[in-house]
Amino acid sequence: MTDKRLEQFDQAGAAIESVLAEVKTAQLDQPTPCTDWSVRQLANHVVTGNLMFTGMITGGAPADGGADHVGDDPLGAFQKTFALLRAAFAADGVLERTFPTPMGERPAARLVTTRVVEMSLHGWDLAKATGQVIDLPPAVVETALGALSAMLPADRSGMPFGSEQQVPADTSPADRLAAFAGRHIA
Image 1 (cartoon, helix red, strand yellow):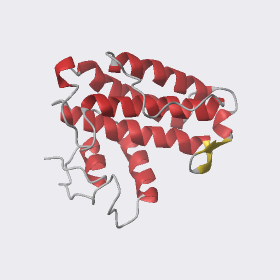
Image 2 (tube, rainbow, N blue to C red):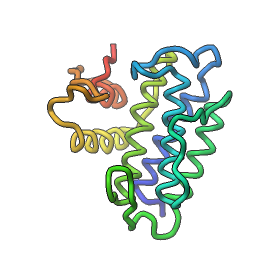
Image 3 (spheres, one colour):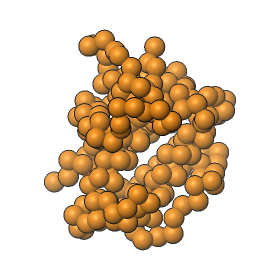
Image 4 (cartoon, rainbow, N blue to C red):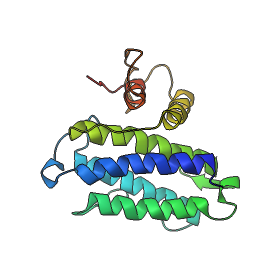
């Protein structure tokens, strides 16, 4: 039986993978809602995150945060690093352990949730930047919203997250997540 956390990890990964599969080479230098990053840079950020978390879980060397890990194939790089991280999370006993991170000791379950948040939100960013729509399951969005609610202060000044944006009640789950993180969905 698959752990619920890993199931949501898989769903968030599949969602961003479907977006990356439709990104055209000509779109790689386009801006994203993450104003400091182009599509290529944001894809690289997600891939680098997968590598960093894999290193934390396996005890491997930390990934070079300044390196280009996507090259000419952001989709392939994501698929490869996602598979590595998925295997690390799924290893016997990993989800019951705590690991050293740059922010201190963290339980593996929290690390899985952090990646769900990253892939979901940045998947939305990449979709928005490339004229796509991302399909995030409501349960994945609820997990991501819960994690962000616990993490973000009321005053988000100076943070990479803006103030929560108000959206209509019928807004898609993915757009609700983006709006909570301060993204303008219109």
